[in-house]
Image (cartoon, rainbow, N blue to C red; front, side, top):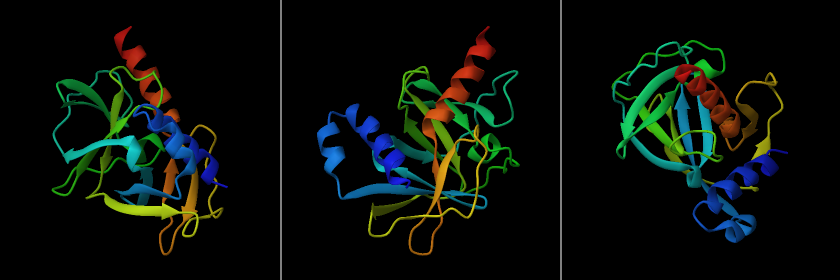
Length: 179
């Protein structure tokens, strides 16, 4: 069931804000539904630092296409990635609705403690509880893909991203780019 990795990600993010005890007893989790080209991601609000307007990133030489580059945020350069690209899909072009979702890193692999995802529109704030979330096993994802699972909630079937896997992918590319 997706609730175990989901609550684990929330607990890790909450520890950084000093609320780990509360995270284990939460009945509802505020989350963002982040638009992709052909679907949505669902990310606990505790993992999100800020949603900002799209800005053209500084390219990183030698990086794979999904690692779009870095964008300035709070006085530092934050890695920006395309989730679709990280999953081996075509990377969509930016549009007037494109946003950047800045995330708190769950581990220590990403320098600066933050990274960002490209959103294909405005993320939607939702409350998630065990009453509205069910596993959706209609799709299978390869082992190295940054997807934990897909869930069903009402009429949505968002993907639960593997944020730790994304951090590993970013860290691997960043270390290659600096060597």
